[in-house]
Image 1 (spheres, rainbow, N blue to C red):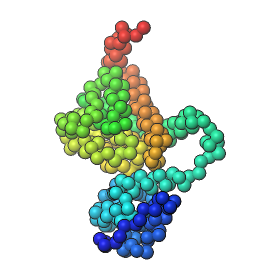
Image 2: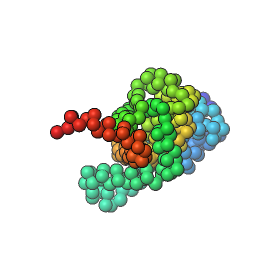
Image 3: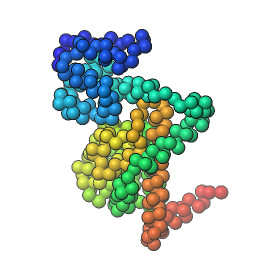
Length: 291
């Protein structure tokens, strides 16, 4: 790939989209650059839902070639390319007339309901049952989450702790790696990541798997890097996460999965006489905290 090609000028101020910018500069691209440009123009979802490594392998080019192309079109890197593409694809989708007339509370409620239905359809029952069985059979469970996924990890910890399971949640990158290193074949590691591409979560899950633990990934993308280090993947949603509304929808669907896991585990444990005692212990322990 040519290193002397001048970057495409940022013409967003003139109203040009990223697609238009690439099309305008297309003739000046090298053969290799045109292959990358063709993928962006004809299959932007491939960029959005895959890592730079996966895209480079698919195009049979070096990862650095893809990264340099991003800079050629005046972007800081591959992650900015993904975000810009997701934003522009979303702008292409016309709003439904009824959505335009609906109030913001109504729109958010409708989005949350739809995202939960999406999650219910995407999660395979056999895969979900495998996750429940793995958690029930675990000696120890460690949950990893960062950013907005951190509170979700803590919530799942509370749910599982209330069931009497040996569980902890780590929302610090160093503690995650330390915890992962001490897991073994009798343990389970659960990674929660909305986009599934947070490097530190993927690294912790990879370390947990290397230690012999079974890994369960909860994410919003079916082709995200976290799925590559997860023995069991619970995919909540298969749409872009480009803005605050999509992020809200993603969180709603992931919270649905957390509740679904805790309720399923409760029902399973209620069928076992020894396990039901753990549930009553939780209730007894907080009785004096309630009016």
